[in-house]
Amino acid sequence: MNKLMTLCLVHQPPKILLRMKKKGFGAGRWNGFGGKVEPGEKIEDAAKREIWEEAGIKVENLESVGTVEFEFQCNPEILEVHIFKAKSFSGTPMETEEMKPQWFNEEDIPFDQMWSDDKFWMPLFLAGKKFKGRFLFGKGDRVLEHRLKKIK
Image (cartoon, rainbow, N blue to C red):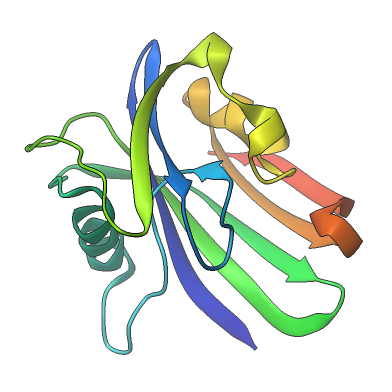
């Protein structure tokens, strides 16, 4: 069974806004903003809600750029993550109890402090490509298998 999730990244070349997850699933890693899609909620609305809750900013014009399925060897649940790009927002990114936002230049993205799959799909994201993929994680959140393809 798939669990619907969102991931939203604010990209204003050459900068990208990431957040450090301070607690819970993914703690200690830089990532975009996102989380679960609530029952009855549209996926794009969930992405907007999550970035508001996690950074205190409002995004309107989201571009759907990809869908990636994540499977963990020890867990039968598959995370179906819908990835969005926001080029603009209103408000000022702020730290919350759960997250700390920070701008990075594209060449300084801290891949060694991110999920190990990010280095595969992030270059497509930064290049403005759309993509679809699947990643299987093993112990230590290491990528065991992956498929990734550009889509139109």
